[in-house]
Length: 299
Image 1 (cartoon, rainbow, N blue to C red):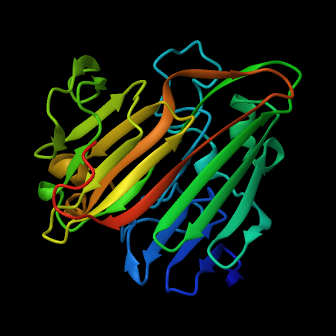
Image 2 (image 1 turned 90 degrees about the vertical axis):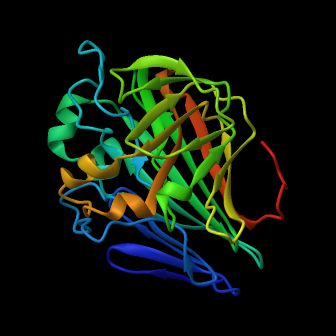
């Protein structure tokens, strides 16, 4: 299974026509094609030159989700979504290569982080990010090791942008009757009593302690195609679409591109993970692209 290493990214392919592209900048997966069909959204206005976080794909959020609400926490001075997505990872090589799948690995430690960010979060750490492609399945896994002499706290999130034909038709199953923080409504807490999430306006919700094994993203374009999301050691899930007004105010997103994207983001963001010196943490997601029989796989 071929792996092509370019100056700015790595491209992996399988024999059945599926592929993925991962930039060294942020270790951001910018493309996942299932037998030629693109499954991840990447804005046409996104900068890919390392001057700004990539708008689309799967940015890695670490060690802070959004901006810290508490100004006293250690990560408070970091920019939106932390430092990993705006740091250049190093190439770690092919870690698994067999007939059915290929895994590639990327690494980041504190010495690779831009100096201005190291000054505001001077922790010694090591990240290993592994991306695995297997035809209709993409896995992204992150490990964090504390290489400092003192404990540190962090958030982590895989900010996944799914490519969809029409946001007004999309529905998300698997978050019924789960408490969430609604960022659109001034961070009020609510419980979702709808079997499915539908999108008719700006949506920005943080679902905490999600017990569901599978979260299903239904495309609902008549094809019965869906994404099945399985999380490993990531207890929370963010659901986001900026909608009309917010899209117009984002310089790296086209005014109408909100219609072709939805973000379902597994993470650990409602509180912080604490790592003691020499300890490690690991978590990730597995996404499968499927065509379901009508009425199949209720979650």
